[in-house]
Amino acid sequence: MSLFSCLYAGTLRGMKSLFEKYNQQAPRYTSYPAMPYWKNNMDERDWFSCLEKGLALDPRADMYIHVPFCAKLCWYCGCNRVITKNQSEGDRYLDGLLKELEIYTETFPHLKIRSLHLGGGTPNFLTPKQMRRMLDPFTSFLSDDFEGAIEVDPRTCTIEQFQLLADFGFTRISFGVQDFDPEVQKAINRIQDFEMVEKVCAEARAAGFKHVNFDLIWGLPKQSPQTIARTVGLSDKLAPEQISFYSYAHLPSRFKHQNLIKASDILEGEDKRKLYDTGKELFEKAGYSEIGMDHYAKKGSVLDLASRQRKLTRNFMGYTDEKAQNLIGLGASAISSNSYGYVQNEKDLEPYLKLASSKKIPLNKGHLKLGEDDLREKIIQDLMCNLKIDVDELSLLQDFEQLKKSFEDFERDGLLVLEKSRYLATPLGRTFIRSIASSLDPYYQASKDKNEKFSKTV
Image (tube, rainbow, N blue to C red; front, side, top):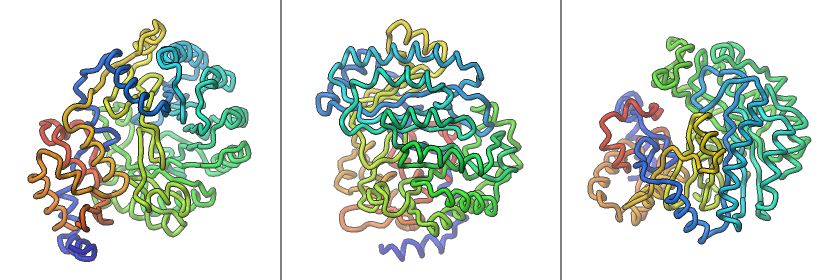
């Protein structure tokens, strides 16, 4: 079936019927299996055994540090965070976090850290002094190709923080912009005007940050195609190298503070999708190409080239052209992973600190990969990153014959096209990529309460 035929078939069926069929609730597949389906069959000894095997193949690791503190609550947020303005909480947190780091460096003294990503919460909640205290112990473990990245809140970052991070080797920075429209900002309790973001963006570049990302969200209350167009236009003036364009997930049953947002102010279905389509069209006119899911990169950039060559990959922090085989997460709720399994730290601050301070890895849950887990993860990630599925790999799965029938349906609906020995997602298929991925997921298919666990795919 040709690409044109696929698109034409999708048009004939109509987007409304496709939304009804495929706009389901499903995982985002930052991991496979998705976290609600982890077997919780890993303890510290099991995880260290997995990590030892992974580091034997490659001594490098990517590292993520979660800083949970935020000075003010944003009503849309679904992240793990602690609201406080007490900066002494940062020192108490670092007491535990640095002890957790010591466990890893003492157990694996030959560890080499390829990258360090600071996320949150708000990592720039930490003062420059606290940041230096956190980063100094890493110095002797950095690889020659080390790269640092940080997520920041434009309302609270400082030149001193930028300079300290740049001196340490940080070159990537992500600003939480979300939306530039004043009415939308009021509706989500996050006020930050364009001039503020313009100022801190210039300061970060002057300090030495070479790769700037903007986090934007579509589907927020009070948004319209017109407000999206304004936000895209203002973002383009600051020329970030990358843009993350996430769909807002309204889950007030899981995140109680989202009840502060009026449901009547939120668009749904095709009306919501028009917000994304407006952004997509304008991003592409501004010289960005769509990569993976929810992300855009400047044409000619490293990520754009990796996407065009279908060599894009990703981890829990986002898309990248290269990643280490091992990821170590430090801090409350942080996730660690490699080819053998996953673990997540305690989510809540006090249980995390109690375990970390006693020199124990503060694990909350985990999953030892068994059977086809690793192969299915590889297939799903290749679909999510590079919009392709290798038929030879697919044929190794036990339910291959059943999957072929599902994929024939995707072809008829114009979501996939079979070319030689691989399925490729069409532009229409990219819209429903999570739904396609979920067909490969027996954990999800067998679940009876899937609608309570995940956001809608579109």
